[in-house]
Length: 145
Image 1 (cartoon, helix red, strand yellow):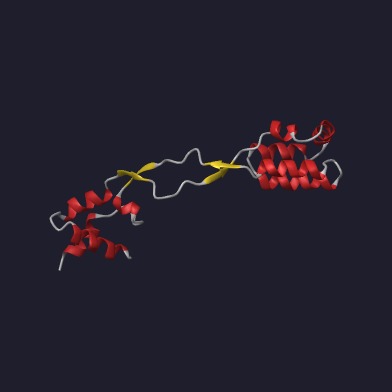
Image 2 (image 1 turned 90 degrees about the horizontal axis):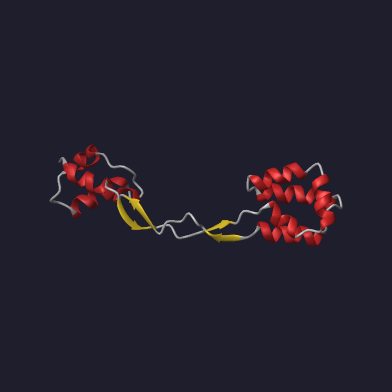
């Protein structure tokens, strides 16, 4: 449905409202159930968690490796793709076993329900319909014969 078609349906639904009143109604934010379903987000992996799933010898090898700072940076920036890339380099170099690599991958693939999700949101009928702010002139042009 186009914006114009949607506005015509709103005019038909509220014929008693003037263009200004209808525009105000369509732009006023109201509390509604969030139309976006709750999602999953990655759980941030910490250096301590990584250290807990590798051997002491691997921790030492990681700390002495030139990619160590890149891994720390990737962890700080929550960039699992960078972490995996750097860990792959360490695994290929024999500084990380396949078992430890796999254990770290499990950590990096963890998800949780989005803690910032809001069950209810403030949104206008126009925004909810996907049309953003409505101008009085948008409604007036449809009311004029």
